[in-house]
Image (cartoon, rainbow, N blue to C red; front, side, top):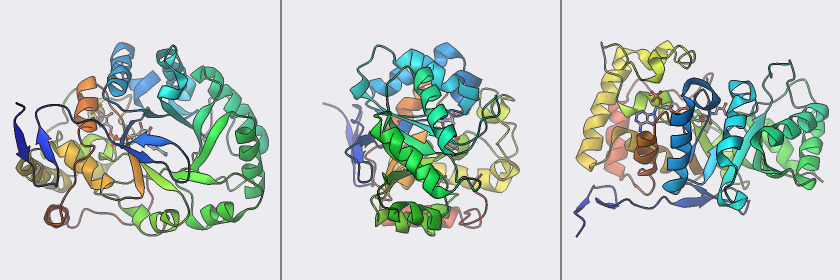
Length: 340
Ligand SMILES: NC(=O)c1ccc[n+]([C@@H]2O[C@H](COP(=O)([O-])OP(=O)(O)OC[C@H]3O[C@@H](n4cnc5c(N)ncnc54)[C@H](OP(=O)(O)O)[C@@H]3O)[C@@H](O)[C@H]2O)c1
C-alpha cells in the first residue's frame, strides 16, 4: 500500500508518482503538460550535453510533452541540441515551440516578412522537423507593420511549417489589434514572465487573453531557481547553481540576490513543508492556480529537478495557503515595470 497523506492542498499525495496533467492551449487543439521544459541558457549552452540530454529524456519519461526553445537560444545551438535528442521519437508524441525576433549571430533580427520566412526555415532545419507546433514572436517588433508580421506568420501556418501562433511579452493593445485582424491566423498563446514575485501579467494580459482564446505559458516561474529555496540569505550561491555559473548568471540581477527576498523564500519553505511538497512545487502550483495558465515552462540542469518540478502538476493550493504566501512575500512582489 502506498503511504498516502493529505497535503492540505486539495490533493492527496502518495509515495507513488502522480501523473502529469494536461491543459488545453488556448483555442488550439493542443493538450500541453502543466509543467513544460524550457531551454534558455541551459541546453546547447551552460548545461553539459549528457546532463542536458538526461533532462529531456526524464521530462518525456514523466509525461512532460511540451518543450520550449527559441532561434536565439545559444545562438541556434539550443534548437540544434533538441533536434539531435528528439530525433527518432514520434513527432506527434511531443509539442514543440520555438520563437523568432531577437538578433541572431549573423545580425538577422525582427518580425519582417523576410525574417519570418528565413528564420522558420532555419529553425526547422536545426530542429530536424517539418513543423513546429507553436511559433512565437519573442517580442513585439516596433520597426515592422503588424499587418506584415501577421500575414507572414499566416503564410508559415498555411505552408504547414507551424501549427499555431503565439507571442511573448507583447503590449495588450498590439495583441488586441492582431486578434481583431481579418484574414489572418490568430494567436493561441502568450509567454510572459510570471511567478509569485513577478505578477505583471495579472494587470491586463491575463484578463484580455482569457476572453480571447489565448493561454499563458509562463517563463521563469521559479525566478531562475530562487523560488526553490536553494539560495540562502548571507551565503554564497551553491557552486552548482545558475547564480554561480558565469555562463548562465548574466540575467541574475540584484533583485533576485537580495537577502530580504531570500529570507522570505526560506519562510515559503516552511509553508511547503507543512503541505508535504517542495518549495519549487509550491512556486509552480502557485502559477498553475491561475486557470488561464496552461503550462509553467521550467528550465532544468539535472533530471532530479525535472522530476521535482513535474510533481507540482495537480497540486492545488487552498485560500489559506495563498494568503500565507502573500503575507510572507509582502514588499517583494512586483506588479509592473520591466519584466526582465
Ligand atoms: N519568452 C521569453 O522571453 C523567455 C525568457 C526567459 C525564459 N524563457 C523560457 O522559460 C524557461 C524557464 O525560464 P528560466 O530557466 O529562466 O527559469 P526557471 O524555470 O524559473 O529556473 C530554471 C533554473 O532553476 C533551477 N531549478 C529548476 N528546477 C529546480 C529544482 N526543482 N530545484 C532546484 N533548482 C531548480 C535550475 O538552475 P540551476 O540548477 O543551474 O541552478 C534551472 O535551470 C526557459 O528555459 C525558456 O524556455 C522565455
